[in-house]
Image (cartoon, rainbow, N blue to C red; front, side, top):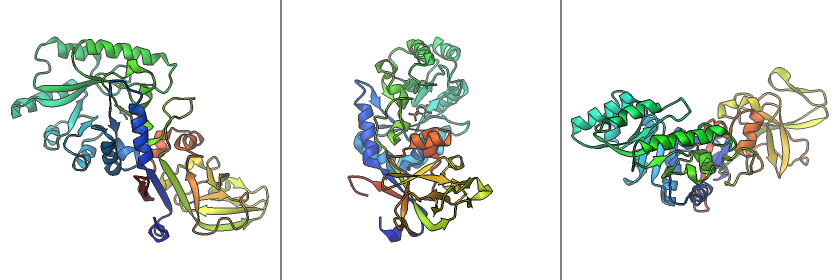
Length: 372
Ligand SMILES: *Cc1c(COP(=O)(O)O)cnc(C)c1O
């Protein structure tokens, strides 16, 4: 991307689709028989579903998951017909026909959703594809085990539904020692016993790393594709996907004792050089990184000082050689030295939230086929 393309923007967000596809392939390589899907909800965790999903399709992915119906409607035209798009929230009452019209597969999460889907199948005199979710411990979405029992007790309980999968979702898969994982696995196996022969899906990104018992027939990674570490406390085996470079608007010298930014939460202890960068919390660079985040230049770590504003943040560049940074230069705000998990831990959140907060204000450059 040329300098002038970047002119109207305060920062450049580079999204490495090659790394993303490598991550998908490396997750798939951990599976022996299961299919590897991709979760591209929330605009592919902020990285752009309309670029991410076709790249994954070219890498071989055929099953995709979004959260909302409108995400599925937007995704349908950018994926070939043999890609299955599943909608995790299922149809709101009255929205069932939109699923059929857009060839989207709902995840049915409640008995009323099941009944509405069956009633549409009767009206259309067709078998309609769906995924059925059973709750195994999240208490968020899905049939309770007794509801599944009720449904499967009657022979025509699932009439009209071409059941593609039975699925459930793990609560704490990133914490490998947590006993809730085994408990959910046990409950899921029991649910599966009620629907012999039906394909099953339990694991998210972290669930893949819990071992083969958790893989069943299809796994649903999201975060790990985008470079988030799947196992708490262990080195991240996945490639970083994003790089965020903020543009320097101004540099200045300040005397020792000078306070910086809103509410003067930082005061220079020495004569300092500081750079104002055109990225703020309105760009998803969370305000909780005030006085705790870091930028990088030439591998040198530079502290974010003072409160992050809506459109700007301030970096202490005193440790860089004089003249190294001038107006218009770029400072790294997220890069392999300072990945989404590192930023998240400084901000008191998780890598998922760093990604999905990124927002639409950055110039975006997609790297694909080694170019971008
Ligand atoms: C978001 C989501 C996923 C993906 O989870 P990651 O932790 O990002 O891999 C999988 N399944 C369901 C039901 C989800 O809501």
